[in-house]
Image (tube, rainbow, N blue to C red):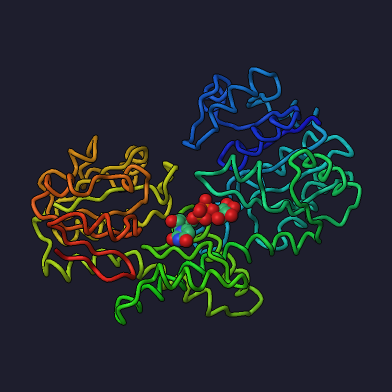
Length: 434
Ligand code: UGA
């Protein structure tokens, strides 16, 4: 099938590459010429495992093209996938500027019988209004499908190729059938729903997962008080298949470009109908409090961190990505600076992006060794594999004080206990001091 994709962010690129893998002829469109030039050379603007390898393979096989010339690509495609960003607006609602621009570009070039697939996360009701807008501008009825995305950053390619479900929301049978066919080679479960249900599934799923995280974080905080271990608690809970073990990892809160924005947008949508969702408001509040958990632990331990060298290991909002959007590390770094600490951070890939947000108020080390040497304490903020595999015994010898605040519970008790001289403060588990 000949497919055009508008938007070359995580969703657009991963979808484009994976549709190429299953043999479709895909053209990805973006307005940024520099980005398109790089993509045509197989260079990805984002860090995502497997992405560059598949980019090159599909470009070389002639199944993947990148262009700024949206007119031609739209006019020549049977399916147009919209994967532009819908960032958070000032009022908590999704900002639809890019989506409206995409709709105008499509309307100006679309041929009859082409199917428009909206992948961008959009407030409930938006697909209908985008369909009406395009039809209004192009002057003939179009076919539109809502097809929300469930991939995670850091495993975007894997999640696209091995999706647990593909949701196709449409009230036009021929359109949903064609999109089913497009996805068929992925060989994953496909469900067809109404447009509104498809839109709602995306928000309801993300808000549920965010709530699950806030729930386990609150349990972790209580575990610390009653002397229980949140990992054992989560495992015991997760064995009940009605609960499930995924997304019960306690830590310092959820971040990224999706959960924070989508929970807020859902609350905002409800508000438009005069409906309040206190549960989701609490989910957000708990998440904000959780982000300062390590700061509170440090203050409890030191009383005052003024002048102390505190090291942040991990800046990205989660491992295997360089994305800094809503990363807990931002709140932690800024909190430490406010308290007068000398902050040094290390991240395997996110330092450049972090610098754009946090600036030069903190130092960015080139290696873990450089960061931790002479440190009063280390805070583990992102659970990168390199941090999990650290030789703690060796690391603490380089520090001024062998104090670790682990915001992601990276280590087994035996590994920590193997250090003869350590103070280890995890989340939701008893500290180890020896
Ligand atoms: C999330 C959803 O998982 C995807 O299904 C969805 O498609 C995507 O949003 C989106 O809407 O586009 P993503 O934000 O990439 O994906 O990352 P997740 O792996 O879900 O992690 C989000 C945050 O939750 C991270 O900060 C992570 O550290 C945190 N988290 C996750 C926890 O604190 N505990 C957990 O048990 C799981």
